[in-house]
Amino acid sequence: MLSKSDFVFSTSELKTYLGQKGINMNKAGMDVKHPFFMMVPKYYLDLIDWNDNNDPLRKMVITSSLENDIKKYELTDPIGDRPHTPVPGIVHRYQDRCLLMLSNVCAVHCRFCFRKNLLNSNTYDFKKSIEYIKKHKEIWEVILSGGDPFMMEDIFLQKIITALKQIKHIKMIRFHTRTPAVYPKRITDDFVKIISQAKPSIIVFHINHPREITPEFIQSVAKLKKTSSILLSQTVLLKGVNDNTQTLTRLFKSLVEIGIKPYYLHHLDYTVGTDYFRISVEEGKKIYRELSSISGHCIPEYVIDIPGGLGKIPVFWFNHVGKNKYQATDFAGKKVVYSDPS
Image (cartoon, rainbow, N blue to C red):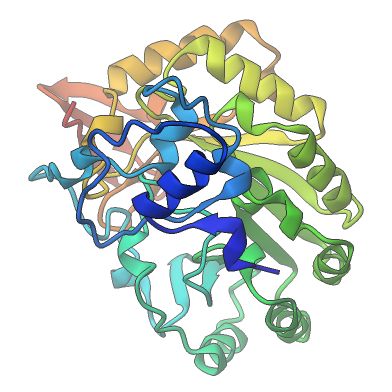
């Protein structure tokens, strides 16, 4: 499983690793004190063009002084997990499904992570979480998130799947993961056997750029197809990374070619220290409209996860009602207002 020698955890470790490869790293803007420390697999570091300070893969995973430019609108809990956490380890926002978050370990620390405030502590309660799910018979689907469930120890992941499969009203298990795109060696044959025990299941891959679709990633996807899981993807729209139609077209078509259906394109959440990744709603809508030239099955739903735990709403449901103000009627018929800070 996870081997610390496969990762770098600081700027100094990164400098040493790149130096061994004969790469002189430009550290400008990187030596910053930040509670969300660096963690990047060496596999992923090798995908970065270190001659380009604006390399999109570099931007996603390497610390920047821009992270300490905190804006007034930014939140430590941008999508409202806390108000919907009845017991440690459960987020129950939608009636028929809940998140089960039993790990704070990821394969990479993405600099735009909306749960970065949760990754410094581990407060879940396995027993209480399973008892909550048993008690709430309206829950049809359990979504393993975190952290990244694919970075759990095999024995613990199997324990979770076994417990869930014993609950009669749970008909679907879903995994949200970035691991295959950033640390594909984790997807071993033994791991695939464990995931196979969850069926029927869904795997949602977090992937943001076509350069993340490497031969190693494609091989890990081929292995996961053996689990008979439905394969979906989600992408965050990020300034300087994928905020153009050409990049997203390559990404979404490449995913479909290997059997993954693009599922969600997320507008950036109000996450602390991420303003430098933000584009406006109008810019996002323009990019999304231009995707209409590709096949419909290649196009994900473009959504905003409304602050305060109000859930996801498709961007095109919103009407522009004032300066930087948008309003929509959500699935429950409630009027929702979103303020665009860009």
